[in-house]
Length: 87
Ligand code: FES
Image (cartoon, rainbow, N blue to C red; front, side, top):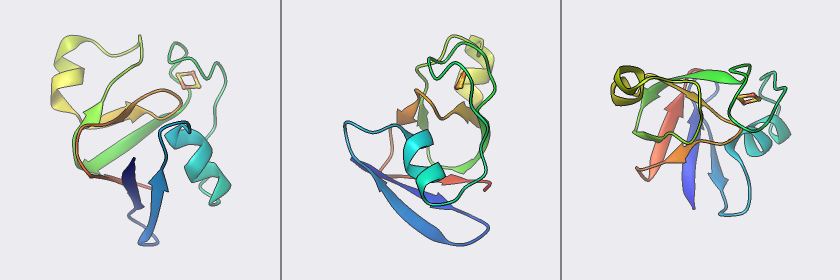
């Protein structure tokens, strides 16, 4: 498990192993659109302010992956204990 912080409200949520970031943040009221939910369409892009995403999508190229400034929350997870998202 890891935590996601929604920067605009300061809300901190825990993402369990069996749940996606998308599911956890939308259940908490974050307004994130999604479509494929498989990491291929790019709809669910979220800006990452802090922490290091564990990219599991098929959208980003290597440079974007390394930059770590955005993530696709339907599939990607976290390498750090907490991600701070621009939500
Ligand atoms: Fe398609 Fe996340 S919903 S990449």
